[in-house]
Image (cartoon, rainbow, N blue to C red):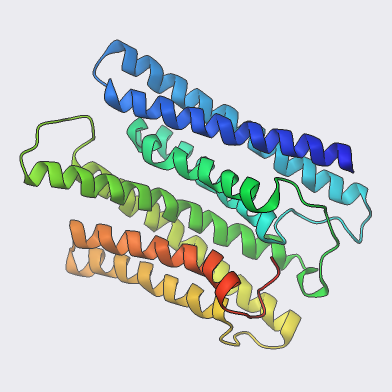
Length: 288
C-alpha cells in the first residue's frame, strides 16, 4: 500500500508540474503567436497538456485499482472524499479544455485554463499531501449512484471552469477594444464570448443530470429526494445562475460584459458549492 501511495504521489506531482510547464508554454505562445517560434511553442503546449492528462489519468486509475486489491468492501471509484474529488475535478478541467482546443483551434485559452489544472493539484498537495490512505466507503456512499452523480457534476464543473477562463479573457480583450488599446495577442472578444457560451451549454445538462441523480441517490440513502441540505441548496442556486445565463442569451439576446460577469459569478458559486459548503456549512454531504 505504501509503495502504491508513493507512486501515486509521484504521478500527481509530475502532472502538477507538467500543467505548470504547459501554462508557461501557452503564455509564450500568446506572446509570440504571430511568429514561427510562437506557433511551435503552441504545439508544444498542447503536447504537454496531453502528457499531463495521461499522467493524471494514470494516478486516478492506480488508486482505483489499488482500492479493489484491498478487498471488495474497500474497492470504489476514487470519488468519495475531498482529496479524490479534487483530483478528479482538476482532471475534468484539463480533459474538457483539450477537447475545446481541438474543436475551436484556440490555443490561447490554455493560458487561462492550464493554471486551473495546476492549481487543482497544488491544492491537493497543500492540504492532503498528495495521497491519503484508501479507506472503505461510509454506508451512504456504497451505491452505483456515487459514480453517476459525481462524474456528471464534475463534468459540468469542468466545463464551467473553461467558461470562467474564457470570460476572464473576454473582459481583458473587451477592455482593450473599448479603449482602442493596440494588441492582437488575444482573439476578438466575440470569439472568447462564444466559447464561454458553448462551454456553459455543455456543462449545464451535466449539472442538471448531477442534481437529478443526486436526488435519486438521496432518496435511496436517506428516504427523501430533497432535504435542503446546504450542498443541495447551493447546487440549486448554481443551477439557477447558469439557467439564467442561458435564458438571457436565448430569449433576451444578452451579450457582452453582463454575460461574462454572470459566467464568472456562476463559477464562484461552483467553487463555494464544492469547497465553501464543506468547510463553512455542516450538512449531510460533509464527507471530506
